[in-house]
Length: 526
Image 1 (spheres, one colour):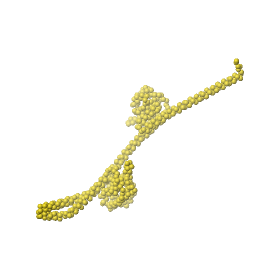
Image 2: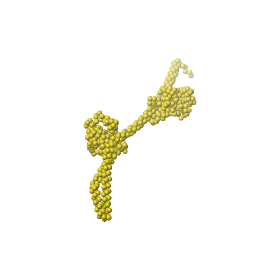
Image 3: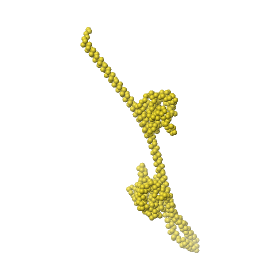
Image 4: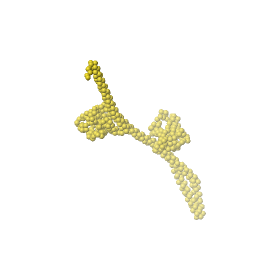
C-alpha cells in the first residue's frame, strides 16, 4: 500500500538528506586536511632524515679526516686519505690531486700528481692516464679557477672543449659533474682536489660547505703536521748547535789550559831543572866516590892475596896502601856523604815526579771524569804547578780545614785554582801575600783565595767573568781564565763570588756541593 506523501514529510526527508551530505562533506574535508598534515609530516620527516644522514656523512668525513691527520703521516698520505674519504662518504666515484709548481716549476700553475682514489666499481684506468700529464694555469679549467679564486668551483655539466685530452674520456666514462676544492695551509693553497661523478648532480651549497669545512680541517692538519716536522727539525738543529757549542766550549777550556800551560812552561822547566841539576851533580860525585871505593876494595884484595900466600912483606905493603888510600880519600867522609847524596837525589826526583803528576792532572782532557777527591790536595798540586811564578813575588799562607771528599773533576778544579793563583800573583807584585783557606760547609766545602794586591774597580767586577775580558796589558792575558773557571764551577753545581777593594785586595770565594748535579743524576738513574 502506498503511503501518501505530505508536504511536511518531504521537507523533513530533504532536511535529513542535506544533513547527511553536509556531514559527508565535512568528513571528506577533515580527511583531506589530515592527509595533507600527514603528507607534510612525512615530507618533513624525510627532510629531517636526509639532513641527519647528510650531517652523519659530514661528521663521518670530518672524523675520518681528523683520524688521519692525528696519525702523523706525510702530506701526500693525508691528501690521499681526504680524497678517499670524500669518494666513500659523499658518493663521488673519482678524486684526484693537483699541486702548485715546486722545485723550479711555475708556482702559478697546477700539475697533476699520482694521488687519486676511485670506487671499486669505477674503472679509473683511462681517466688516470688522461690526467697523468695535465697541468692548468691559474684560472684555467675547474682546478685552475679553484686555485685562482681560493674557493670551491662546481661544474654541473662537464663541457670541456674537445682539445682537452680528458674530454673524450669523460664522454666514454659518462662523467657529467665535477668540482674542485682548494686545500689551504700556511696561509697559501698547497693543493687542489678535483672530483667527478657519473650522475648529474645539481649544485648543493650545503654539501660544498661541508667539504670546504673538511678541507679547512685537512689544511689545519697539514699545517700542524708540517709545523711539528719543522719544530722537530728546529729541535734537532738546536740539539746539534748545542752539541757543537759544548764541543766548542770543551775546546775553549782545553785551549785556555794549553795557553796557561804555555805561560807556565818556562817556570815548570826551571822547577824541574833545579832538582835534575843537583841530581846530575850528585851522580858525578857518586861516580868519584865509587871509584875511590873500588880502589880501596882492590887494596883489600891485594892484602887478602898476600895473607893467603903468607908473605909478610906483601901483607905489610898492602896495609900501608890501604891506610894511605883511606887517608888521602877521606873514606869516612865518602861513606857519610854518599848516603846524603843518595837521599838528596831521591828527594829531587820526587820533586820532579810531583811536578809531572801535577802537570798531567792539569792537562787532562777528559771532561766527564767525576770521582771523589780532596780539595786540599788539589790546591797543593795547583800550587806546585805555579810555584815558580809565586815564589819570587809573594808569600803563600795556607789555612786548610778538615774537609770531606767531594765528587768532582779534579783536573778542571785544578785549572780553576791555578787561574786564581796566577791572577793573584800578577795583581800583587813583589812582597805580597796570598792566603788560601778551606772550610767544610753543610755537605760541601768553601774555598777562599785572598790577595793584598791592587784590587778591581767596582765597575769592572761585573765583567770579569765575561769571555775575553781582561784587566791585564795586551799580550799578558787571554781573558778566558775567569770565564772558563766560572763555567767549571757552574758545572759542579757550585758558585764563585768576588769581593774586591781598590788598593786593599781581592777575595774569590768558591762554594762546592758534596757532589755535582751530574753525579747526582747518575746516582738517581742507577
